[in-house]
Structure formats: C-alpha cells, structure tokens
Image (cartoon, rainbow, N blue to C red):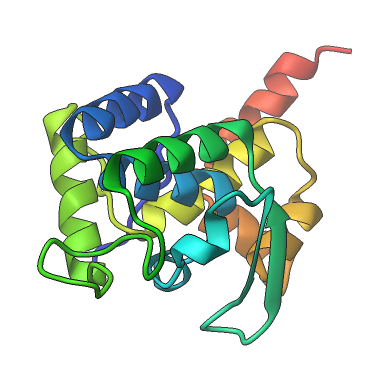
Length: 182
C-alpha cells in the first residue's frame, strides 16, 4: 500500500472541490465531509441520510475503534449536504450510494474517485482515501490547533504519532525557529 499525504496547499483543495462539484455532487460531498470531519473512509461510507439530514452534528460509533464520535458540522458541510440531498431526492439509506443500487460506494471506488480527480487538477503527490483524514489533521495543526487536541480527535495514542501521521515535515518545524525571531 502506498503511503498517502495530506493535501497541504489550499489552492489544490479548492481546485479539487471545484472539479468534484462539477463532476458529481456525491463525490464532492464525500471530499468535503472527509476533509472537514477527519472520519475514516469506512465511517464516511457508512453514513446514512438520517445521520446528516437537517442535522447540526454527526454522532456515530467508529467502526475501527468502537468509540462514539460526536462532532458539529461546519457551514461548508451543511451546504454540501443540503445541495446533494436536494438534487438527488434521497430520503433514506446510505448517503454515498453507488449508481447500481442502495449500497454505498466501495473503498476502492472512493479511492479511484479521489485519485483520478487529484491527477486531473494537477496534484502529483500520492492521494487516497486516507488523504481526507490526514488533510483534516494537517490543516487543524497549521491553523493553530494544539497537537494533543488533534491527537484526541483522531484517536491517536501519542502526539508524535499524530505529527507523523499528518505529515508535519522537518522543514515546517524548522520554519518555527526561523520565523520566531524574538
């Protein structure tokens, strides 16, 4: 399995959002929810219409850990959910249904969607489904969220695991020394 990275560049995130939104609102919503929630792909794909419709929060039991996860939805997520549900007329069942029926898309299909979209907009770094979760953690960190809080959000056992996971590079840490200049 190839190691994937977060999408560090906000312009690339915007380009990917614009591309996906123009292609398929389901795929756009998958991307938006993924980068704004930090959920694992297995938990994203299991979301139902009932989990998100007219909701301010998502409450689920994580598949991997068995722990409850409860978090508020950002305005970006709410708008994407509303737009998707309005255009699809979905009223129940899985949120990210395949075109063939009522089942959710597979992890492999989600990977293909994200990977192909990233290539199309010129992202050359390895991208996969885990990129969504890593992007969430990376941007939370860059925006000043303490690493121990991100650790808790991602259910990691130690801060150094979180820093490694979200791809904080030595160069980024070195820039702290260079930019501080007290």
